[in-house]
Length: 304
Image (cartoon, rainbow, N blue to C red):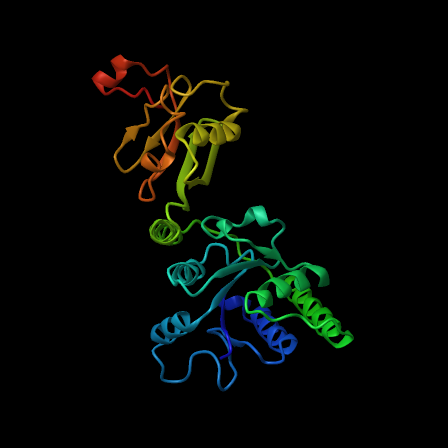
């Protein structure tokens, strides 16, 4: 039986996805079924009269892999995360993010950043992606002039599409943030069930200092301690605060419970999963003065 691959994408990236779908089918000699929602061919995409959500769900359930096509305008689109999250919850499927027109893999947001990702910038990078993808299905890329020509033609088309595309400014989208958190929670649950305690997920972190405001995600795994999280965040803040200044100049603040994180002496031995749980949302806030036990008793946080 042929493996099924779903290309998850933003609808305005239809041209890029069409090139990728044709390429994968040509280099595998039609040994892989490709489906994507914007396919306009007679037998592909969403057929006339279909309920589109049911069609997408059916193809997600049938997919052996989800290739998330990430472009600058796709990074903040809810459906990319919904479809990838569906794959994360499907034991027989896996997720491969690919970057087109994105400068660095470091620009991939969580939770997709947890997966091995590939940039499509030239023939060699496209061949690496194809080899990795086909190896998952015990297929191999033919090393021939014809294959080389097909790949060269595909990367030329993709490059031209990117050059001729005007990308919209990416706007913050609370729906995307909520979907990311849902994917993280589901991934965390599955990891605990299937990987005997091994897991990795992320929680949102909003840094809100007088001269620095960032939105990031903190990655938590089975080896992460609270002190590790504090160290990572300090490196983001080091131009704004002094070393060893937690509870002196800054503090973690859990926005759902509206509480600061007052853990210091035991942070080396407390697993981060017990504090930075998947359902939590965090901020980094500045302190007007050092936090003390008296502040705790009086419930005064002295937050700026």
